[in-house]
Length: 104
Image (cartoon, rainbow, N blue to C red):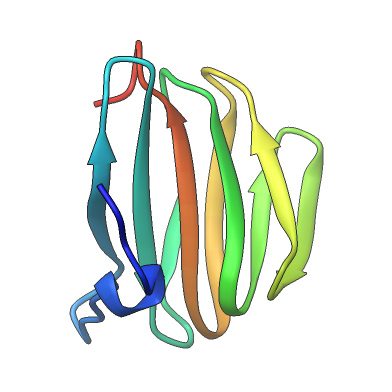
């Protein structure tokens, strides 16, 4: 699979954050998470590890280690079963690489 512009696959909604599957495999899943300014994914645990890379915008990522403001080009990794949340400060597109053997 070849994608020339991953950002163009993102979708936004005034109703809330939008998760778009880019690639699903046995070993990992790649998703885009798009949030409008002031939208939030409240902190919650997930049964898989995930690497988040901010492609556009800016937001606060919450993990067990605290809250971190990340912008374009910044990244964070969260372990399996770790609390995670995102609060958007400026319209964001986030690339998530999920551990595929446990991701839903």
